[in-house]
Length: 499
Image 1 (cartoon, rainbow, N blue to C red):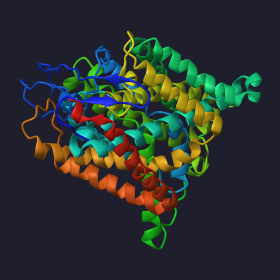
Image 2: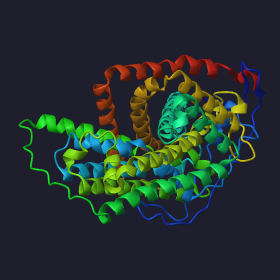
Image 3: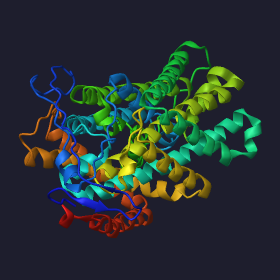
Image 4: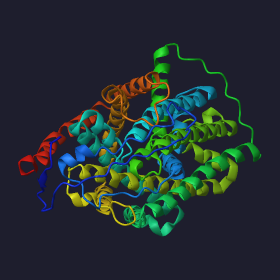
C-alpha cells in the first residue's frame, strides 16, 4: 500500500531502517531498434520510480545493482530461459494431434508470431520502467501495491518450483551418463542448484559469462542437428498418406487449440530480460532488441528443428514420441544418439536453471526494496548479486526438491503464468492512458492492435487453463486470494505516525 511521507517500518525479525533516497536514473540515448521502432531519438529512458519506494521507507544504500549487462546477455538469457525439455517433447505431442506436416510447422510459426506481438508490448514496459524484478515491477506500477504483491509472490513461487523440477531432471539425465549417480538422484539435484547459486554469488559478471556460454552451446547444437539432418545420408521418410479430416470440425478445432497451447508454453521464457532492467547498460535500446531479437531467434530454431524432424521422419514416427528430437539423433548417430541427446539436454537445462536462479532473487530484491520484507534481503554484494535473496531462493528450491512438492506448484503455475501475461499486457493500455507523457524510449509496434491481440490470446489461454484443469485453477485462485491477509499484515508494519 502507498503511504505518503517518510516512514519507519518495524519488522518482526528485528531490522529497522529509515527512509533513504534512490537516485533517479535518466539515460539520454539515440538509437535505432529496427523492428517495432516507433520513437523519437531524443527520448530518454524513464527514471526509476523512487517515489513509491521512498514512501515505504525501505531503500537502503546497499540496494544498488550493477549496470554491466548488454544485448549479448539479453539474447543469451532469452534463449537459455526458453530452450529446454519442451522442444524435445512437444513435437511428438503435436504430431499425435495434427495430421499434416504443414499444420505442424504452421503451429510453430503461429506460436512464434504470438510471442513476437507479446514482446512488442513487454518491450515497451521494460524500456519505460527499467527496474529489475520482472512482472512485479510492471503490475505494481499499473495496478498498485496489492496486485504487484500477488503477482510477485506467484512469480517467485512458480520460478522456484520450475527450478526444483528442472534440477531433478538434470540429475536424472546425469545419472544416465554417470552410473554412480543413480543412487543419489536427490543429492545430485540439490548439488546442481547449489553449484549454480554459488557461481551467481560470485557476481553477475560470472553468471552472465556462464549464461552466454551455455546458451551459445545449446543454440549451436540445435542448429548443428538441423544442418546434419539435411546432409547426413539416411533412409528417406515415407510420405504420409492423406488422412481424412474428422467429420465434425469441433474435434479438429479442439486439437488445434491444445496444440497452440503446448507450442506457446514451449516458447515461455522469451521475456526473461525484464528481470534485469536496471542492470542493462541502455535499457531503452537493449531490452527491446534482446526480447524481439530473442523471439525471432527462438522461432527460427524451433521451426528449423521441426522441419528437420519432418524431413527425416514421417509424422507417424514422430507422433507420441516422448522425446521426438531423440528419434532424430538416433537416425543421425545410431547408438550414440541417446547419449548425445542426454548431453544436450543437460547443457540446455543447466542454462535454464541458471536463468531461473538469476530471476528468482531479483523478484525478492524488488519486493524487499519496496518494503515487503527485511531490508537485508535488498542488499547487493560487491559482485552485483542480491546475495541474501539468492540464498533464500535457493533454500526454497532445495526444500521443494527434498519434499517433492514442486509438482503441485507447477500444476498451479499454468494459471499463474497466463495471469501474469494478461496483467502485463493490460498494463500497457493502463499506463498509456494514465501516464501519456511518460518517457517511452520504445513504443509497442502496432499498438493497440498487437497489444489487444496479445490480451485476447492470454484471456483465451486463461479460459483454456481453467477448462482443462479446473481443480488446479481453483486452487491457484485460492492461493492468490490467501495472500491478502499477508499483504495487510506486512503493510501494517509500516507506521506513518513515526514519519
